[in-house]
Length: 335
Image (cartoon, rainbow, N blue to C red; front, side, top):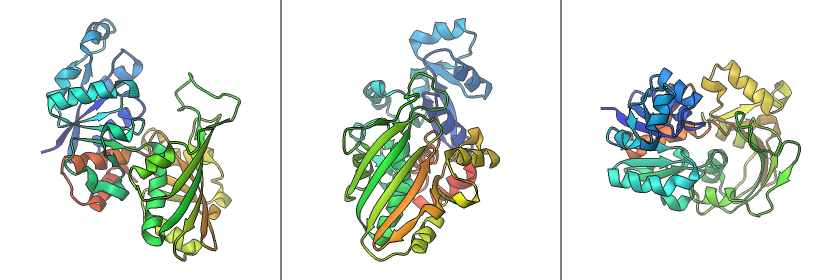
């Protein structure tokens, strides 16, 4: 029996989760939602995803000639779990609706940890969401930090971590926000990213700063970690090589920037040219004494997608072992 999954909000993350779910053999998409007629709504229907809309929007979709399968409330009757990819200002409303319908739900990292009380990362705390009604997959940046810091802490113990996030200003398809020709620091220190990492690793001493720059491709993190036990550069690289959701590249081989990373993703033939892995410049990793320095790149549109798949398995008690769930997800998604 496959887990029946609904996607509330068929946008940047929602459409990617829908594609990923349908690559798995133990779950399926039974419907997606849009609030207004759009090209994404039309594409969802063309791809065979039943489209559900707010009752107040039924006529608008009919007038636009876009076929719908029913209202969002109708979708609730047909699912085991909702992956919520809606804007943050409606989370409490939908949480109440999911609770009333008796269905499970996953939110994304744009929501606060307090919404669910559980924040999910597959490698770090898979079992914490086991059988839960509500959980939250942490943000793209937090996912990136957890993927590299958690195994470091487990192997070498981290005394302190200091991170500067060089953030993209918008997604590639977004023309509404900037900055266009500016670098904008986040003057609130620490930024929210450190506390978000601590929602999964509460014991970790981490401080974060961030700046926005005029790019849409990816985020880049500069990371300095004080290790609690002896390690060499090669020890660290070998640890990361064991994690399929980390990809090591070399600047000296031509992968010098986020532009080349995205080109690599295109050459790999990925769906939507997505880079699910956290990319680390191997020749930019260095241990000096007990201090580790490295750079990593995060594809904000896609690194959380495999985490959503694993979270579904944990919450719906499909696979108890984190490693087996991750391996299954990775194989299905070509990671």
